[in-house]
Length: 427
Ligand code: PEP
Ligand code: MG
Image 1: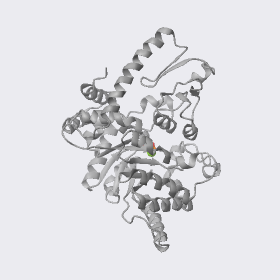
Image 2: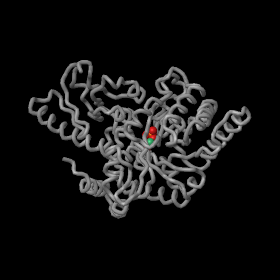
Image 3: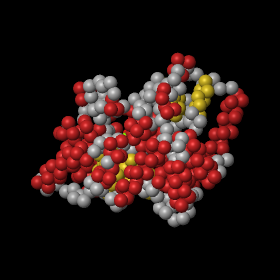
Image 4: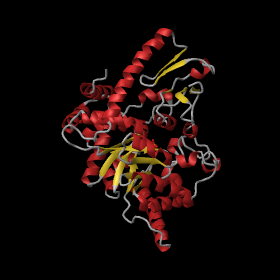
């Protein structure tokens, strides 16, 4: 216990977060950042309480001070009193017993009271997270953020190194699907070992990121595509492009993929000719042309973290405007409905793999809107499965219909909260 610490930092980069030793971290607090910054997403998978956007804690705290971190309510208390510790001790016991109920129920299938199965998949950042997926009964991986293989590497991983990592995940989880997302470097995830790849930009989230970067670095992109194709032999692998903005970009990416297939065929290297290929819908232009994209993809996955950032013009890592980052904004609810309707018109499945999917208060809204699958950080799976098993799809559809008729984000959130509380007794 003595060597366990709460980490307090001004900011934590995604690569720092990925390299934190999980066995020594008791909690994480940062002055900046917001709920969907990649550092926080990584902290969430570490199963430790995290509070972001404390603004100035680093100026008030010293190494060795006692602090209390309440990750549920987003509260940090410096030098807590005996009474506070006693009160929180009781809260912790209540939360523990609720979590134990969740974990026990998590062994059950993800089926609603009216018999609909909702696939719940896991988001992972590294190939060694497969045990976490299994521990939380994830039905495969809905999002493998492959850029984390690069973030702390001294050099770009080779095709062979990537192949080994992807095959390991695919084999361990087969026959469940593993959706491998091609590189999403850039934004808040530059490649530190080679700063020349990502020169400083004024607006990195609107800049040289993800598929834009890959289409200009074809050698590196093709290494990854070949690695994914080769890994497809070992399991149920699906490939997904991030940050697709429209059908031309998708066609360019698919042309590169086709070149890789031809190269492998020529060398008689086996791969799954039928490996499904999909795109993330996370840019408004893709969302509004989803009728076109849906006919050119085998599946779609909505990246709500970015879609909300770009729809509402809220930088997802800027904590000064974090209160304006509202997943229940009517614009978001409407665009989600549009994406689902058009995907289903084209007879393909659509999932959500942004943080919204792992929020048990918002998951029923997504299901009510018709989303087929949800993918999230493994420790969030039990709470989402719990609400799925306590509701009907018919009720979720009524919730979505009512939400679509409302005009304010707060009203829609309150409606979702009411839906959740009516079905899950918290104490
Ligand atoms: C998203 O944008 O919702 C998403 C899942 O991708 P990332 O968080 O890695 O940008
Ligand atoms: Mg994204």
